[in-house]
Amino acid sequence: VASDDLIFEDELERRFGPHWRLVTQASTAATGNAGGYAAGHVGAGWLSQPWAGSPLQLGLEASVGAAGGGAVRVDGGLIGQAQLQARYALSPDWAVQLDVGRLRGLREIGTPSSPTSGLFMVNAVLTHRG
Image (cartoon, rainbow, N blue to C red; front, side, top):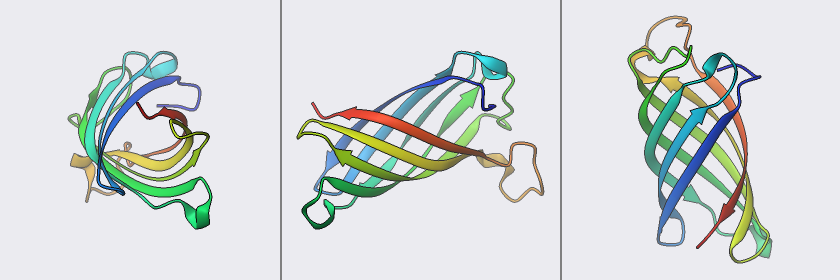
């Protein structure tokens, strides 16, 4: 996946208590060398309480899944993703979220300098709590 690839992602989450959530993601690439790439993940996330009465929450998320297609090497398709998150509530139902993390093929862990040694990602997300 290159910087000129456009990836569409859909994420659903189910909260379990005030901090923990189950997360599912589906993504597909529409342009560039990654056109035809698709991935699906399932994992867990944690969000802090709002900081000092502000609408800002910080969080972590980790997931595993499968991916393939396009010109993206994923070493057999098993992938893992970890990211840090900052979420800012615009209203009780809407928030903006910034994710920074890494996606990599899980079969490459422990192998020196694999060409798929990980993809650094930055995502901006508009979330709705329904």
